[in-house]
Amino acid sequence: MALTAITSSGGALIQETIDIINDNAAASVTLTGTETLTNKTLTSPSVTGGAFTGTGPTGVMVTKVVSFTENATNTTHTGTVTIPAGAWLHDVRITSSVLWTGGSAVMDVGDTADPNGYFEAINLKATDLLVGEVLAINGSSQWGGKEGAYLVAATGRRGPTSSNFGQYYAAGSSILGTITVGTPATTAGRTFMSVTYSVGEVSAAVPSGS
Image 1 (cartoon, rainbow, N blue to C red):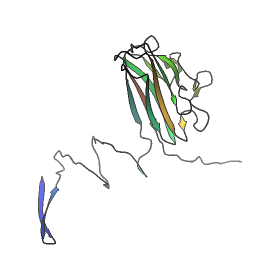
Image 2: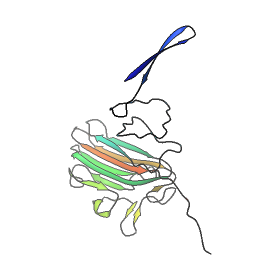
Image 3: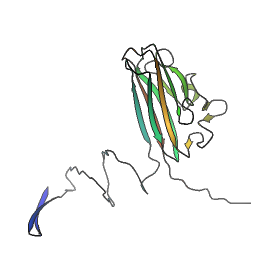
């Protein structure tokens, strides 16, 4: 229910509406701006445009999806997902819901340092990535023979070796998906790239012994 209070300020009447939430009743509260919640439990919260900052919780998994749509005009489609410094890159996945049908359609996936480091020359028109198939960086069985320099089954390599190291992006970067189309003429193709990462709380190991 709501309680309405009438107060006076400088000769003007001010009406304030205060929502009173019954513990046994369903209620919806919208918070805007800066709010401090102490000893509160949020049940099924919906966060729009929010971000954890400062001393908030760490290790939260974040997944961002880039959609690529074929058109009859452009020869290059570039998708970018920013990876913050100190993040762990959990996975990069590529799938298509409709095959591309232009003169040619080839996709590279990598990061700022090596744009085809993860996957190289994926043919989006044919057998490299049929509808329902998924390429992913975790596990060589999911590479489809299209792995770039960052993925080496024999050594276990899974990422860059300078500034960022394997799946630990110490300096941060951007994951890039780039589709190059030869002679664009159709609007059929639909491809999606998902990138999952987290920024964990870092604790130092305690040395002992000598």
